[in-house]
Length: 148
Image (cartoon, rainbow, N blue to C red):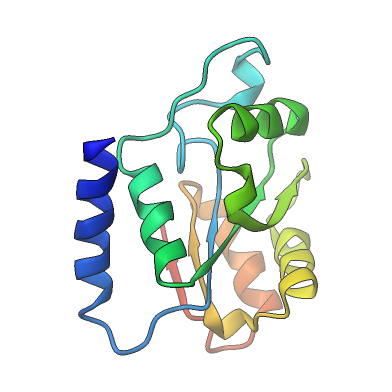
């Protein structure tokens, strides 16, 4: 648990440098919050997060920044089981976990509808660059940030 607190403190220090922070941070799951694809695993497996994920999530919560999930996992049942097993599911203001062969435009439209947070107040983390163009199209020109 000390690593979680160390990462949280470091994240809070970094956030303290900025005068403007997002109202909502949206994360992909596979290879963004955890180091695997859900469809390659079983519900019975024990999942793990990337080492810094939990500390960052706790830092965002402390700063009252909402978090959401936008995942194209073809196995949403496994993804939600893992969120429960990791005891982090309650941290998310919105969970959009469903497969589509397209980008994550619909995921973001649903997140926006559920949270009321404008696109230009969102920060998006995803390991797959192919998910970005459509999201940018559905958002205004001043979409806040994207990190791959």
